[in-house]
Image (tube, rainbow over all chains, first blue to last red; front, top):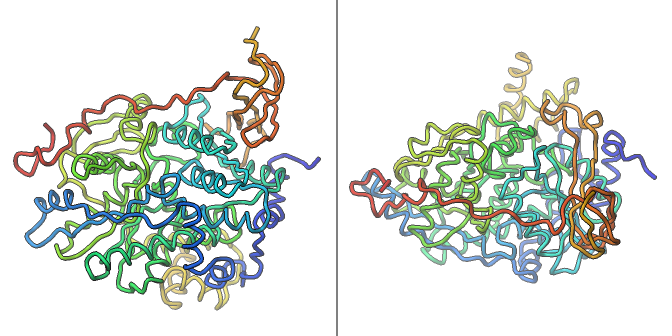
Length: 471
Length: 102
């Protein structure tokens, strides 16, 4: 029997990954830093029309686009004359399993079936688990989902408990784990013991699956109002939603559309802390994923992450937990639909941004997710109160992650904070210098980093020299 | 003495995967001092007793062993309590563009 210790299993990472995915990443790697991203997306992915046909086999894609006329009308009362963009919403909750993650899971599970794997494994506490389980159920594959659920008191976030229930409803085996980064260790062990396919969130299959979302929304806006949207607002966590959507928008030929990302601000809470784990009221769409994944995408369970958000983001915005809960309720009372809450992060940021756009402009909120027991503002705010968090009405500027959730008093108070992309780029380069301390950078590395960060080669070189001198 | 549980009952088992000393390096202190744990639900393969080591068959037919901790583990999550701060939100009730709170 193989050694099951933490060190031994993580040392076998590369061989386990290779066997569980059938992608040879060596083919795309140029240097320890640089790799051929487009070649990887092309060789390991599928063309858009094939993805549509794969997705339509399993109740994914072709989701409705709604105009949020009620919210737009109320918002304009808080805008200067002639301002207040039209807000549209892509109702991704209509996918099998209730979120856009079905797009991401669909191609991976199809690939697993095609390659003859008996089952699929994914490590996720979010909607992705339910999506993989639902897709596996439709393709007759076994499914194992690993979730980080309980703190050392045995307490679990209601939102995660709901996802566990949903996975079981689809016939999956759910491995519920306590708080810690060792989730990855146990994922490796599970892949090794079962020989199942690694339905990682970060493979080219997963990202290619999201491209249909960007493509569809452009086509829908065009057919509705005869022009392209001005802005697409995307909830940003691991980077796949931004990357896939932006690539799909580009494939629709909508070259002038700006792609903006939004995350819930959870600064100050440590993601691997047993205590902090249940002091947050969002389990995804937050800065605890958004910033680390933007500034070093390759921190994942695959050798090279296909989600590279800084290649696509035109802006990045932070909203508070209270603002997202507020807009979730707004969606119910003004638009008559209950969705989210986590998926409404982008709705909060879009409402904020729409105020500063002209009333003939269009902003698209590109996803919703299903709502239900546990996964609902009242469930999550009740849980927060039971964990000693103060919930009150007031000025959203007074939000303090892990301590106070402030629900705004009125729509005019929804104000996202812009997080400068220049800071994200700078953090990315700092991470490169930290991870490769003695590395001699070549032209290929600078060219890769320039592409990755949408900077000039000279810009990258200059910034790295300046950062290195301060290290 | 634990509760006797019949074979075929849907239960939850618990395993300690890593003792605190075996955990990953560089994790926060509060996390590092507790063991890394796993819980799995499945059907008991033979009569057992809560608190004892048992074997289960998961929903995909895999067998796992561990300490029997729950019988018919409940989905305890719900919609929580009404949150007045949310229920007061309704811009159409606002008198003057400000103060959505009823």
